[in-house]
Image 1 (cartoon, rainbow, N blue to C red):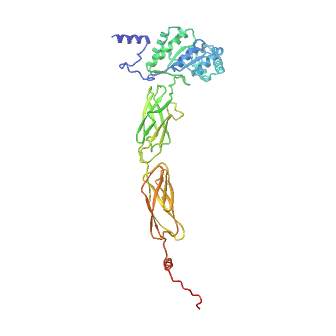
Image 2: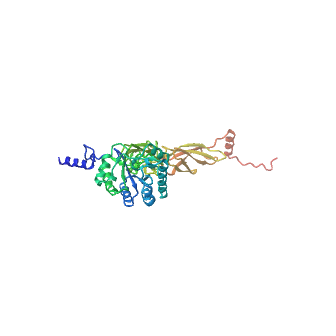
Length: 462
């Protein structure tokens, strides 16, 4: 019973629903899941309030839009620069905060132009949003504003801080006026008498609304709250993975946002998508408010001996996110295949009688490799070498057979692999060398030359 009473009192003080959704009191509401709130501040800049307000919002990561009065900017341009340099948007609130419905078109344009000039002279980007003082606008004023290049901006929630109230009362007015999934634009002031109370109300407003699932946004060029655009990054749970294994990737947004977003994870590096790993491109979806998503990088198993390859990863695109400009993660794929076996192919060659003969011997791998395999061979005919190109399985090497050999018939010459890189050597092979082929006349002459005739001296015989 006591717990219920405490909860009811908290609701009455804060002017809305509890910070945590029922019935799971211990389950927090997803950030940004209920929509956006745009804080706007009018009538400044004030030397006593505006710098403090900028620091307070900046520390809490809350964007806001400041509608400034031209005479105040002209009197202290440094205050406008402080707001702009901190990354906050600035809008035109006319020169002297006069009711525009009682002015001519020329007077309205003059008030806007003088304020714009004061802001630009202070080093602030030229504003595109304008808020009519007191919210006083009719069709004629709206047409003049739009013809001058401005988007008229009003509000949906009036904190009435200009009329007084304690910080708690101001915070309750803001929080109670915020509606789920609506364009919540809050009117507050940093340049009126009661602005110090507004300053003290901001922490309560921010904390309560975030607990209820809202996030804060700046006004876009159309005058509406713009969803935050988070930066997306990808990381891995480990930096090395064996071939055929998988590694988990984590895609993370640096802030929540109020709309569903997607991030496109792109691979690069020395590994090849579709060959070394599956699904080279992957789109990850984030529901509103979610900041973390997971996916798997699955490597492929093959029987190719490979060097260590690397997959570089980054978020290169998507919808509603800012992609990364550099590679954000890397995974090394470790090959687990043994090196290939290299063999020499047995060959037969017939020697030529007068010229040397080139014997072509085949070099073969039992499976491909993505590294070049260098082979050195020794035989009675001398050394020889060959290179099997990366991705290939065959090559040839040349042995020189001298002319006329062999003289004692067919000979088998052993060929031995004496050196190899990136492979294992198999057993020796044999090169068979046949003697030269002879014509009948050459065979007769050779036979005659082989017979030893007696020496006959014919000298003195006539």
